[in-house]
Image (tube, rainbow over all chains, first blue to last red):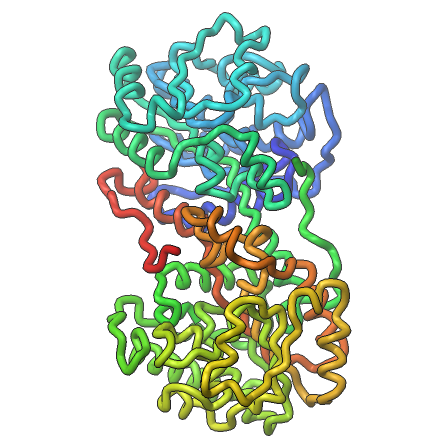
Length: 290
Length: 290
């Protein structure tokens, strides 16, 4: 689902397609959710491109209902791509799920605080935020179904008004660095029938994995100073493998792939002799430069 | 041509395929040169995997002869992918060509000095080095047909014994930073009928473009201190556009794409629940870590 409006940045489109190209092929049905590439980015009721995002979430829902799957892999795009599939899975399994929110950010902002929907999606899944997005979640997750994993940035967003009484549990990057026990103990205390995993690639350390919004080459040195150390690729692999060995994982969303090099390279190839147009001057566009 | 043995590193295979995936589609015929993915990496007569590399260069030659094209785009793979196509083009145009070697390195090493063939290929095209590779170049380039562009590393290799009398001209990163005049004047003084461009992506600055061997995330901070500043993406685009507006470019090789993030991501996806094998432990392999 190459959605980009929720992060307000065109490279998410290439990020989603590249992620799909790199992923192993599965036997299940494959659907690409149609995404409006030219939609307006105006703020509507506090949300950038709200109507396009809602339309896209509803398209995703209808494609899921076509297949009524037992499990779903979602390749994004911005974090908002998980609204429809995670809402579907929690309803399908009667709320007997646990949701691991593997992410540097909590994604619990509301339109009053921040206009980009990719930071709202967990709030929506908890029944908080814009009414129309919340209406797409027939059975909201309860706070005790959710564990933040690797959260280390903007934790103060958890203290926003609608979230402050929810007390969602957290496993920090330090908690998961040596082994997976904190996460496994949390799951053992809840014994969910099924586990759903949100994996925002920005949980990874930008010093190791650089296809992230925050690893913009133009501001990388500055961000390296400001952004706390994230989790290593091997840490997250080990953790998700450990979880899947003990529990039935039915949902996996991978989001926020921001392939700076591939995007710049694609732009460059379109402008080179023999391959592209030697009169083309447009540089690769980004909307949010730190 | 996803050749990897000349740089002795598996990610060049993915680098070539990804480069092709990102490139605009052309109308001309497309061929993928068959590459041995499991070949021995033993040193033979001073060259790592010499026999596999020779076989692959001969396959490339035969695929070119099948079409007898007027122009060729080559997507690598390591720099050695250009041996057959550039040899073909210089013969086809009776030596009336100029070869712009857009690269951080001169690629004029010989087996006695360095075993990885990707650093030998320009020497071979000039008629220097391993006899069997040189025999693949029926009409060697003369030194006055060649201009180094963006060269800023290992310049001392130009003083190796076979090269020291050749006096190949150089445009440094500083020479091309503001405008393309130094390169255009050089071409004007030679008036070639056709221009051939070798574009090793490592001519780009690793602080801006990080899908380069030298931008290994594990050693990035150290390399940033050691590697001199390269050219920006926009500088190289402008230069190649300026050249192509004035001259007939008939060959373009793009090489040494080393997509660290995509390679690590591909490995990770193969090991995640739902998508891959949760018992798979193998990390992404590299052969040369600085």
